Length: 243
Image 1 (cartoon, one colour):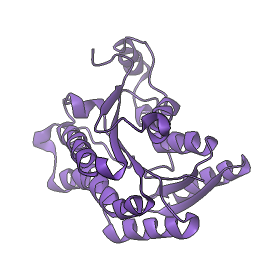
Image 2 (cartoon, rainbow, N blue to C red):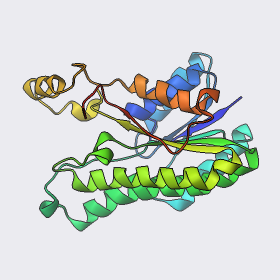
Image 3 (cartoon, rainbow, N blue to C red):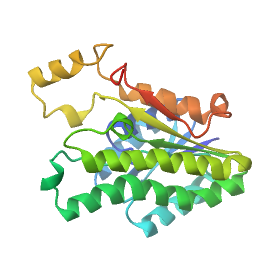
């Protein structure tokens, strides 16, 4: 049985990714920071449908929690095949109005969290003789967003980091790729008015928002044998938004 660690997977995009992997027969590790009940409910749903899942607390800014999560995963399933670095936070504000704590929190969670989870997962992947690292960036890491300068910088950093580790570990049968989603239909957009949502959808050539399941399907493609010769890539999935 293949094993996939998915950070930030109790809700939103991560939840959809976990469901896709579970349906494909992966044992999935549902990592949550604050949404314990959501993570447990997701695990129950996966198990009820015949899959394998465990949930565990993980603050990606805490190295001890990262180490504990990984060792717990190996204790339960024996190995790790795939790491999906999905945990992240966003904050909209003019850069001049951002305070130091918010800047640090965004960078520590999005970029440093991805770096550290990867760093401490690598020994397990090397021991396994192969592995797949899939990092979730954003179209704003490709093309910066106004009023999201720090978020955009953190997501751009993930792209550069992905390319670097792809080079470092290609010889070890470890691939590293980055998914850059466009406008996703998640709870993060629920605070927008109907008019704002309509205007947003109108700006997308395909005239609809991206579904989390579609991100999960792309991640699965990269995780399976179909992605064995793909590494160091940043794949934009945005319905043509950046065209």
